[in-house]
Image 1: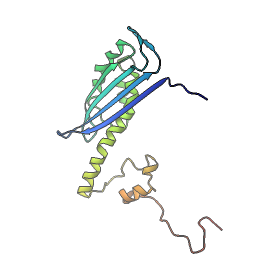
Image 2: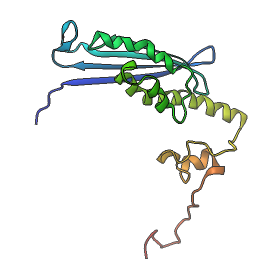
Image 3: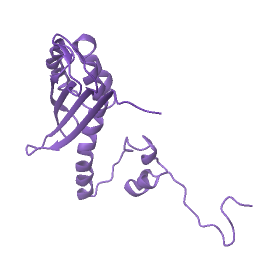
Length: 192
């Protein structure tokens, strides 16, 4: 079987700590075709040239409150797409927490937004969290704090299972595992 490359999408997200104590996230999405395609109003978009080249820069704090959200579109298939850029400013003031995607999508829904940038919102939220989580854990370790309430991460995925090894080490007071016992001599675990 032979394959022919037709389309490439690349997405890169980077999180930065800033000297003013805030954080910045940059997300960039690029789409390229391996053949000439159409672009309006110019006509032909040569193979390999970006059909989409869109960037988001988001400034936020350690509590994941968005201070600024800027979208720019260096390449789009239609000139009208760029009209959505300033509408993404409406995401400033939102906090990345439960319900974030629903509210963010509501603010830039339909013709006020851009499908491709809305698709990035999940990755943006996850990357923002990943940007600050290490800093939070380092501060917690320095204070030797242990949370009073069960961290939301517990049971959010396999790695953070309440009966898993990481929870046992990180948050022993919330660990719900079973003590491992060594099998008796000559006995095979699960055997008769």
